[in-house]
Length: 222
Length: 86
Image (cartoon, rainbow over all chains, first blue to last red):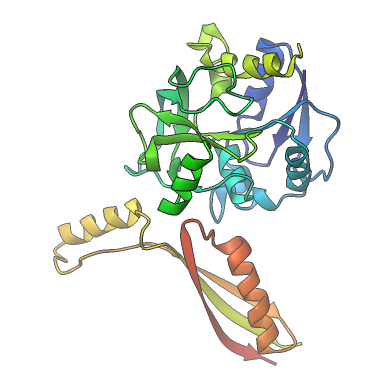
């Protein structure tokens, strides 16, 4: 399994994702610089969390126009699995690769804690091996994780089974308790929780590892 | 080529909750400004650009505002094109 991890200036979870995938799962990880316009042959792509470009203007706004995003869009258009975690999720919405947007948490606080989420759809290959309703405990760490979409957009998400994960105890005011959404095709998944921080029993849980391992099983790779 | 000055104002759509604005509104009321009913916080972006004429300056700024400065999912924007220097 060969996965690319995008590196933006200001991202701070790229090495964590690298450790989780290479150190815990034994995947081959290639870091991809934001200014490159092409990506090597990959099985999957991850946009990690952090504060890309200082989150200036809006979270993920400037990163969404980085040269590498064109290559990410091409990889996704060809059916490649893409995962956006936290700021990576924000980048994917800003780039128009995922619907909706992320705004300031309802309670204004930056929230950093373990959070239970429920699989709302297993249509995405990242979640294919979970049953709908399966609970995962994953760390969240965000100030702008309140998912927003207008009512017609929400209906479209529901109609196309694009709501991937919902919070059990909505921490940030997200519409529909949404913690993660996928694109229509399902190969792009964005989520606010950090699965890479739940890959090692030594730091409190391995529910995130199950998410990554599921993709491998689905792809028939090792 | 003339230089144009512009201000682009970006704010959250009226339907989108602005918790920062609500916090400031609460503080304002606590300071005795009881008549204040609501506060919403946006941003003003000052831009200087060179363009052959006002129409083309406006065209560029509108494109920039719609594609980068504001996210139509949760924000609206307005453009003020100010003075022009020779």
